[in-house]
Image 1 (tube, rainbow, N blue to C red):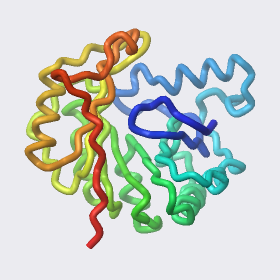
Image 2 (image 1 turned 135 degrees about the vertical axis):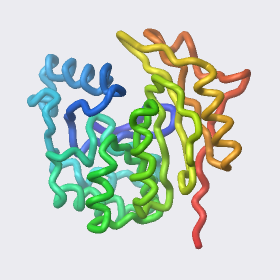
Image 3 (image 1 turned 120 degrees about the horizontal axis):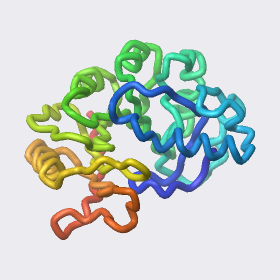
Length: 239
């Protein structure tokens, strides 16, 4: 449910919510769904409801016990802004993040419309990085919604990247992660799509992180792009 993570752009995961529902084409081969089904079959009590949205109240305070600063991916097995997660619960999660400034929290949602609606009721302290998933042209509107959220660091996760993303407006976006789909049924990602996003990031002074090429066996394809590993992170600028 929590602990060290093998995800390249973070250090730990924290899952006060598990379970989700599919909202766009990027969800087709959801890794979290596969993992939840496996854990359910193994009898893991956290997944007694399978992939139905489940709140874990006993995990809200978990990061308070982690003394060493970490980058923490919030809800790698869910979406904090799913309609079935009450505002009051989200506020409790935010309170923990607000009161543990030694950690950096990375929240990723495919529901930026609800994020924006609720944002006046949330406290976006500088240690909270807020992101949205943009897998193809059909969901580029998510960027405009994220841009209106009062987080000091806003980022895009273009993973799984399943189509080109040209002519991106990265105004007030600080970080872009790109990755290919992995696991059973993984859809291919073209190198020109990745190069285009990388070049757009550099032209607009946005940090670029290339996570993986993906594929059925992602360990075979690695994460080298044009003979280089891209591990850029955003810089927090206070005004």
